[in-house]
Image (cartoon, rainbow, N blue to C red; front, side):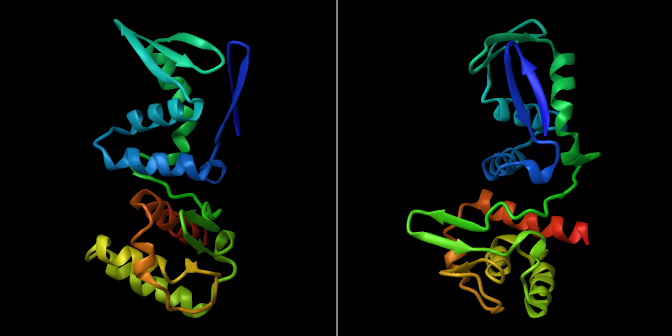
Length: 193
């Protein structure tokens, strides 16, 4: 974690993928669906993690309202410097996918409850791993269709199991930003291997 002090208040900001909360990861997922530069993404993540918002812009200086601190003037160089805490998210213009901690071991939404694997996929079977590899190849063809089938191999309704079959229809009810983060978790695991 990185500690940032603004005024008399301290803020803890994530220092890597695995220190991000599920809400922060979902926000990142939503931001990345827009046409934003890498720097814009990092600034938006900084503002989100601080629960801050830009309230006015005067010339090149922004006035940012930070809860518990009030309005703070930040020039562009300071904003770039502060947002560099999120450099770990990118390698050039590409996401690094360094997430190996499962942000959704249990996902709850209204009456839907899904149970996922342990951190680092340590409790999945060899059969599940092979199924994930197979579905990952199909994801390239049509991510919208195959993402729920892919995730149903390791996120189960009622309880986590080693079964390779899952109910992909249930995963279609999960918001897209959540399923995208679930997929990032798998990619982070592969990167860690």
